[in-house]
Length: 114
Length: 112
Image 1 (cartoon, helix red, strand yellow):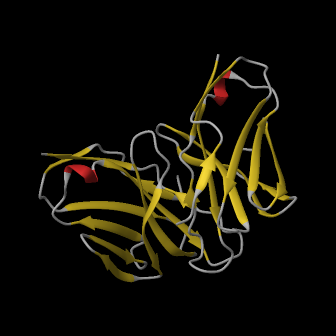
Image 2 (cartoon, chains in turn red, green; image 1 turned 135 degrees about the horizontal axis):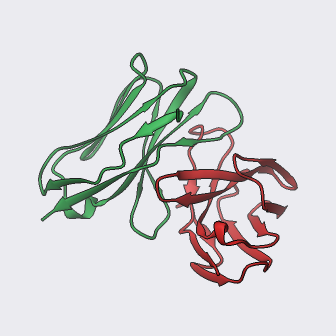
């Protein structure tokens, strides 16, 4: 089974703090994704990466950056957390080829910014 | 207008009912269609995957794609309380971006 793990289930941070969210997958997938999920808005893509050190902006990249130094690990960074970044953050991975587009999700990190 | 529309519900049904969940979309380039199930406070898990038009069955679940109407459905037979969750449709084009477009999800409650 594909396993995607996220470093924290719940996080509470203060406005202005730098926040790191870590994601690790164990299936040697090339592609990794970061989403945020908010009520009524569904899942929105923040960034994705299709290879080590490669990244592309998603639909809402403002206020976020990412890092992919190793194939299995994809980090989301909030440079200066703000209250409007309070959300559920979901990491996903997918293989290149195979069932195109199928993504496997981690359990999510609920972030509260005070 | 959103690319993918999904009724948020909630949809409440008695145990044993047949459930129909639906999404409509506007982009005819979508070729791959998925349904994810998300339990409260958990990440989405892949339930069904379909390429292009047609039906696909897996146990109590049937996924249906009608590309001419830009409409996809998920049917759940003999629904169980454990099926209570949010169901998200997702779709993508035949390109290399691997970007999924999600519906906003339908919350389903199956009453014992």
